[in-house]
Amino acid sequence: MIRFENVYRSFKGKLALNNVSFNINKGEATAIVGPNGAGKTTIINLLLGFLKPDSGSIWFQDLRVWEKRNIVNQLFGVVLETPAFFPEFTALQNLTFFSKLCLASEDRIPELIYEVGLDKFPDTLFSQYSMGMKQRLNIANSMLHDPEVLIFDEPTNGLDPVGISDIRKLIQSFTSKGKTIILCSHILSEVEKICDRAILLKDGEVIDKIDIHGKLVDKKIFQIKYSDMKKLISMLHKIPAIEIISSDENKCIVEIDKNYDGSFINQKLAENDIYVSELISANNFESSVLDKITSVQRSGTTDKNK
Image (cartoon, rainbow, N blue to C red; front, side, top):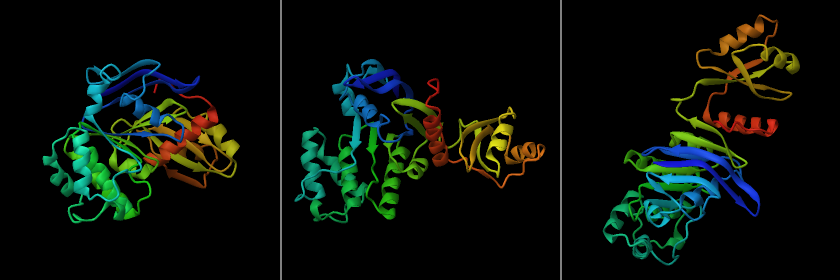
C-alpha cells in the first residue's frame, strides 16, 4: 500500500533521512521505531505530504504522495500524542464541529462515540476528561472521514496501565476491520503486542526491518556471560554459525541460525573448555531492537541493504 523508495530529506544541510526504503502492507499494523532524532516524525510528515523529499519517491498505491498530496492526505487519519479539543464541549459537540471541518458525515458520530467507549459520558465536558478519555476522543476524531490508514503517534503516553490496555485493544480492533495501522511509539512492549512488522531507524537510516511475530525471522538471539569475556569472544569468532551482535565487559549478545539452539552454543564452547555462567534466550522484540541500536552505536555503521 505504501512505499518509500530511496528517500532523502535534509534540514538546513543536516541529513534527516538517508536513502530510506521500506514497504507497508495493506491491512497490517507497522511500527516505526527508533530513538529520538531517528527520523520518525520526518517520515510521517513526508507520508502526509507536509514535506517534500529532497530525492526519492513515496507512493500510496499508485499515487505519488507529494504530487497527489491533497488526495492522499484525505485517506489518512492521524492520532497525535497530545489531544486538542474545545474544553467546554462534549464528545458529541467536538466531533460535530470537526466533522464539518473535514466535510465528513455527522451520521457516523454516535457510532464512533460508542466504539471508543465515550457513550457512557454523554454530558461530560472535555475539560473533565481523564487522559484516557481524551485519547479515546482523539481516536474517534481521526475516524470521522473513515480513512484507510490510521497513524498513531505515541498514543499511550501519560496513560496508566489500564488506559494503555484500553487504547491497545482499540487499535487492534481497527486492524481486525482491515484498517492499515502505522504506530510510532517508544513503548516497545506495546509495539510487540499491536504490530505485525517494525521499521527500525537510527540516525535517519533503516537499520532493520523486523517481522515481529517471527514469520521472516531467521535468527535466534542469546545472551552469554562468562568470567573471561575476552576468551569467550575470541572463541565465538571461531564458530561460523554464530554472529556476535554486541559485547561488553559483562555479557555478549549473539545470533545463530534458527535451525540451532542454545545447546549448540553450549556444546561448542564446552568443547573448548569454556563453561558459561549464563546462556539465555533474548529472542524477543524489545531485546532485539535494543541490541541492534546498541550494535549500530558501537560500530558506527549500518547495513543499508536491510
